[in-house]
Length: 98
Image 1 (cartoon, rainbow, N blue to C red):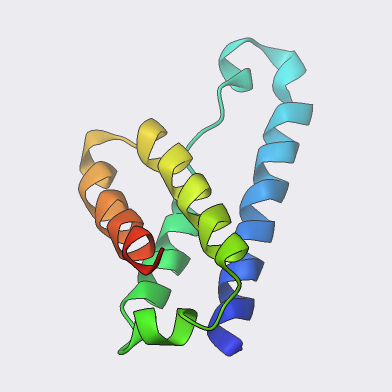
Image 2 (cartoon, rainbow, N blue to C red; image 1 turned 180 degrees about the vertical axis):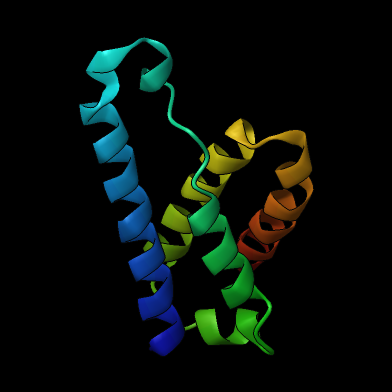
């Protein structure tokens, strides 16, 4: 349950960051482009490195895992080349659970 709550909290934070960027986008067109949420990646990477990560999340609702995969795919798509490798690694760990 703790792992599930951690993932839910990270996803909630990620969605709030997206909303804030969207509301601040009126300043310029470049600001409308959402930046990758490196905080999201860092927390999900930390969570996915826990021993028996897949086992812990096997009991979580599939919807939360699907939300995590969608958020990670979005972040990976916008990540810099430096961050793509580690972001992709985290994404693959979440996809393996599905």
